Every structure is written in C-alpha cells, then in structure tokens.
Image 1 (cartoon, rainbow over the protein chains, first blue to last red):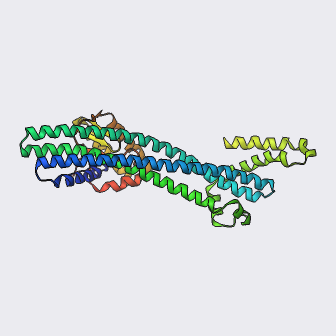
Image 2 (image 1 turned 45 degrees about the vertical axis):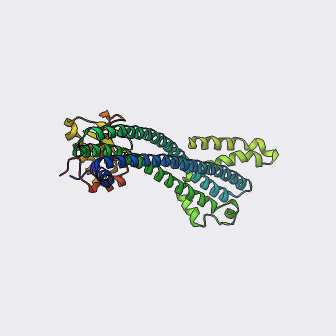
Image 3 (image 1 turned 135 degrees about the vertical axis):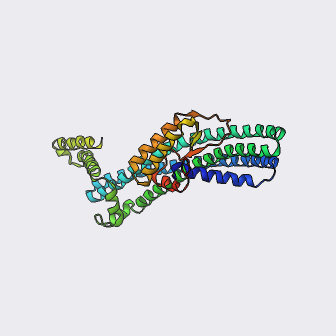
Length: 263
Length: 91
C-alpha cells in the first residue's frame, strides 16, 4: 500500500542515482562524488547564512511592528482626548491586529532560531560523513575489484547523499517559513500604512474595507476593554480641576475591570 | 533496518520491528487520506515516537536509510502530497 514514507525515499534515491550515473568507472565515481559533496557542503553553509539573514529581516520587521503598536496606542489616546471615540476605536483595532501579529512573529522567530541551531548541527554531521567518505574511498580504491567497488561506492555515496538531501530539506523548510512570515508581516504593515492617523480622520465610522476586515480580525471585547482603560486613565486628566474628586471611583472600577479581561 | 526522520536523523530498528512500523505507517496514511487532521497528528506522532526509541545512527556511519519519514512538523497538506509513492513494504 502506498505510504507516507515511500515517496520521500524514492525522490531522494532518484536524485542520488542520477548523480552517480554521471561517472563511468568506480574511481571516477568516487572522485566525482567527493567533489560534489564538498561543493554541496559549501551550499549548506550558504543556506544557513541565508536563514540567518532572513531571521534578521524578520527581527527588523518585529521592531517595526513594535513601533507601530506604540504609535497606534498614542493615536488612540490622542483621539480619545479630542473626544473622537470612533477614531480611537479604529486605532485600537489596528493596534490589536499588530499586537496579535507580533506575538505570532515572536514565536516563529524563536522556532527559526531553533531550526538554525539544528541545521548547524546537521552541517557538522554532514562534514563528519564526508570526511568518513574520503577515507573510505581510499580503502575502496586500494582493496576492491571494479565490480565490488561500484557497489560499495554506491552505498557510501547514497548515505552521504541522503544526509545532504536532508540538510537541504531542513534548509528549504526554514526558508519557506521565513518567507511566509515576512509576507504576513508585510500585509499587516500595509494595512496599517493604508490607515495613518491623518487618513483615519477623513474616514467615516467603519466606512472602508480595511476597517471591516480589521473589525473581523480583532476581538471587539479586547478593544472595548482597552478603550475603557484609556478613558479611565484620561478621565482624571481631562476632567476640570474642580470635579477631580467626584470622578475617581468610576474610572478606577473601569480599569480594574479591563485588567481582569486582559489577563 | 535504518529509518530516517527527515530533518532530524537516522535511527536503527530491529528487523522484528518492521511489522509494527508498517502498521503505524498505515494508520497515519489512512488518517491522512481521510483528511482527519487530529487523527493524523496523533498517529504520525506515534510513528515518530516509535522510531525515536531506536538506536541513533552514528555521524560517521554512511549506511543509507531503508525508510525515510517526513519531518516531525509535516503538515497534513504536505503529507498528502507524499502519497503517490510506494509504502514501507511495497505492494
């Protein structure tokens, strides 16, 4: 019965035998395999460097998102202080989206870090195998007849080739993951860029697609809670001096409530 | 027999474990075919755990694997794409 494990083996083995078929006599195959291994080890190193670069780009994006969260929070406060609650709500909804994205980026960057460590370990393992192949190839050349040598070379080269294919796969997965993360983070940034504070002022309440999408994405209750919290914080600052005392119990309650919801 | 968990490494299992391995593989395959994500996660995890109990193959060992399993974090969609080949025990 066709299974999970079959296809991967088939693809990898096909790739390796294609490599081996290119040389005709055993000793040529040995040298060719070894040269190829050294060459591919360089690619692995380059691949790891690519993963590190992608990770750094993601970390930069994380920083931008962090700045955005701060900016949107400030904008929400400004809007509320100016008495524009609808605008404050929109800013908070965007902040909510950016924050959710930031959390998922954080997790993913941590995973990438782990993958990078694994790949470095794999590179070391591959290096050991190639070294082993190098000494084995001298033994094979010296001790075996052509027909026997062919079999032994093919097995050893397949072993190294398999390791190499596996490191390649790990690398590809790590790079695909960073690309996906980058695309997502870009999309969020575009959403935010399409609604700078100035543009928001021009919008009616929830008038465009982005706003509707954002509303769907963000949890209304979180936004409500945060709105209440900011109101409570601003409450004391915006109330005329004479009414300070009377205003305090309400905002405090609201703040406690919102903290309860946030945790 | 030598089994590789892709992106992780090779493990050596006894020949007597081939049948159990094949059974676990078939369970994962059937869950994947059914598109049943929770069941696939569970059965594939069992399969991976089973292989991890084997003896890790040394770094200087050049023997190729008899079986290569997809990476532990394989998605259901990726796993579905692996299904066109032969199983653990072909036929």
